[in-house]
Length: 527
Ligand code: ACM
Image 1 (cartoon, rainbow, N blue to C red):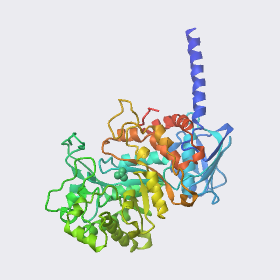
Image 2 (image 1 turned 120 degrees about the horizontal axis):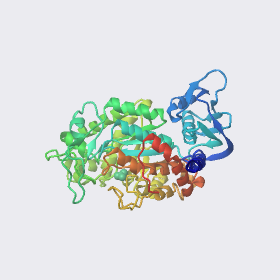
Image 3 (image 1 turned 180 degrees about the vertical axis):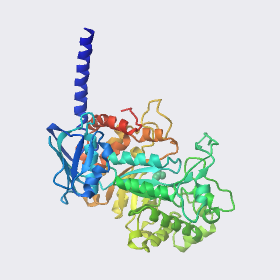
Image 4 (image 1 turned 135 degrees about the vertical axis):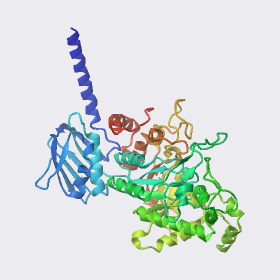
């Protein structure tokens, strides 16, 4: 009797697992543009031949670890069980995927399309049975720019953790890693000719930053990326079809650099300067009227261009107090000479010099500049119309203003796309910014480009989630805040608005959590 009930219990458990795993297999995030689940499943043998051009099929064979239990073998003779074909008729980064009970057929617009087909297959795969559901999918992204920004100025997480972040992005079909490498509280990139960036600007006299009444602690803290490490990360990202956009946030948010080179960067070199130990916005900005400071900026840019081989460079531009310029005779004289009374124009004049420097380079080394939206408070006609406005504060309005000025724009609304903010009002939620209102649902519910007229739509490049690290110093906390809200932003970035639905998203997401677990990712379960 005892044995019998054990047998029944096992049967019941098996049946319930089968139901769960059947559901798991059709869950894809972000939701594909078009997807039909067919009847039947494909169960693969332990060794599977993969055919098609290297540039596409390699996206699968290089990621064989996504398919535990299956050994993937390239074949050049005849069709494999998994076949890749180039299809230039598909939209950029798009793919079509047919899983029949016999084989898998992938058509891809390009290398990225093949990679995204593999991400979809990875989500559909049931490792317990080496099987996939039969499906037909035609899929392409809503936006060409699908970003995630990580602030490593306040806290640095290191090469392995950045790679983990890139893995999280890849699963979610995000394709731009905006790497915020410089801050008042730390400079994280080595630059030839400026050794004190590594020995001074990368170090600070506290780990925990001060805020209001909370004093900084006294733990020595620091770190930076060497050239080799940055190149390693660039290569790792490229394997995942992710381009890296470095951000050198100048002339504001630069106190760490000023502390390292006060004689060329400070507006008041006679005063002491230290890497900042508090949160908030420091007024210790770069003296944009000092030619040596402009040369410093050019040297840093040259190095960033050398390391990061892509079309965009972010020069920050947010929250740049002008008080120090207002009391510096070199700066007031420069403002006079450019015929303005708006100190914000000193910042734009600085950018104009940097832009001219970049424009004089061979085509391969030129970059389009991205700025935070405060740059719109100056005379943007001083800058090229190729600049891109990253809209964060009053994002919809700022993006619209940029678009109406003829500029391209990226939506990264502080509320709710700053996914370092608390995601729950539960008292157990660890301390971070915000009050817990940026829940998963709130993040999901943001509608990009609501009410944008067709005539301006082409100026909107895409969306991005941002992660600021004032309160966050451990990988576990970083992941807990990022995930699964990153997936919510990714669905806005990828899926047609008409196909987006929060209850469906949550159902699919829950079914993907075993995959998160297999990857060893920490994530918030409060949804
Ligand atoms: C920003 O949040 N300061 C761009």
